[in-house]
Length: 229
Image (cartoon, rainbow, N blue to C red; front, side, top):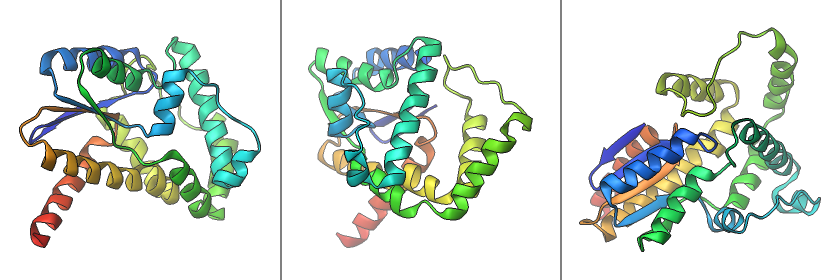
């Protein structure tokens, strides 16, 4: 989904969908942005640019906590498995935006929270109750209604909203750390970019499902700043 707010175009993508690569390229060529913002931090950008292999060494437990470490390992393995199914490397959407910015001499800005902060927060907030819910959901998954998803395409807005709603209800700490807190960080970063570049076109590439809340948070942050100044 694409949302336009002031001089920012927010484009929601899937990290393994070939459709996203096409949409990012088309949006870039159509808009010809002055600035490209991506849902990355410096560590994840470096990993994408260098094609670095994931570090699953146990030292990650000291860095992120046990739960954050396990989440990073499992999520990484799952994304790569799904990426192999469709023949698209996870993160190709962000890498496409980064390469387009570099090749066309556009300013590139990273707006996401440091991954280490996110994983540490996950370790602290993930509750025992939610762990039991995950265990139960895994046990009953073979008997649950199946949802058909085309991995080559960005999921429809209705499905994304439904999935986020279920995450928020069943796993509130996951929703808070993985989506809401990061949306706050990215919204604040975008407000600064808008303030410093009011006359420039800004293409912002983020994961599908972040767009609506981020626009709402951007407006709140702007109102807060207006009251201060």
